[in-house]
Length: 368
Length: 98
Image 1 (cartoon, each protein chain N blue to C red):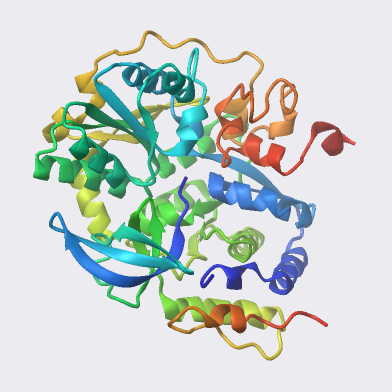
Image 2: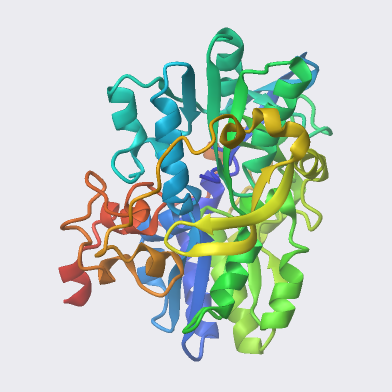
């Protein structure tokens, strides 16, 4: 397909790999933030083709993985009511809550539906006026404009039975939390291309400057990733720390101003807990006061009890911060698999643990 | 989660007061909201995420960046896939190494 196939050419990939090997003179650690990028890097084995000096660690950029346990429990509790329909992107259904997941809530009679777009959830609300339709609004900056438009339309069209359970998170505060965390090894970042398609990259400029880290806005195809890595390594070798844009065909510095206007009209920033990491100040979005009647947490206050504690074996928090690789976990591939996940990064195909597992990376192979 | 797929706008219409469109992804079409891509029209390439156009593909930049990449791959006889109808991309893919 156009704008996909061209960026999967193996001969160019080889030339880029040779170029990276030629440039690099000492060890560097880069983090790709986005789970979609992690998935492509591991699936294509790009991390194993890079020269040994370049290490990739995987970031927290899987919104499904970092949605806190308490909100999953909340969605499950709402789904079990007779007067509700819970709509969600498919990935969320198997994320383990304290005792069960949304699939189990559906099996127990709850009305849980998988949708492709928040506008589909809005349409379900219009067709089911006797039910409250709750859309589980999970995602980064990329998804916020879509969810904002759904709730704005609900208000404008008077669809009063439509509500959002908001779990939105933001990338720059997470990057800063990683940079200030003790033992941080990350020296450069591949910034998520589609997040920046919305948000632009002005927020990343002070981070690059203040922390002295190169940040390269990068696309999602194999050649995009290789070129992004080459640009970051070049900066590190030259002692530069700037924001550069690899994904020029899609991203401009100011981002998508039409989308940002609607996001700002509907949402405001708030502190948010990230599963496995903890609360990061001003790292989330919540509905503004004027949209309160469409806020599921206002409509169904404390629908769930206090969340149970996470698995004691699972090291998801370390994996999400780039401090450990999935196969460093004693449960990886044995007690924890995509069929029976202990932690969220094993659930979503974009979670680092699932990416390693699905690519056949096993502990014994890695340590051998 | 932040998956975005490039597609071509083949129809533009209004629904509930907002700008919508039909987008073609290599033969499969889907309805998408074009409210965040006000400048696009029939024939534009957009990146679609959860039913919304989040970005317009800059075709000149795409051709230019691919040309730079192709140059470093020392590819011979390469024709850039800069067609508007999208079907030539496959046809004009760089020749495989002998």
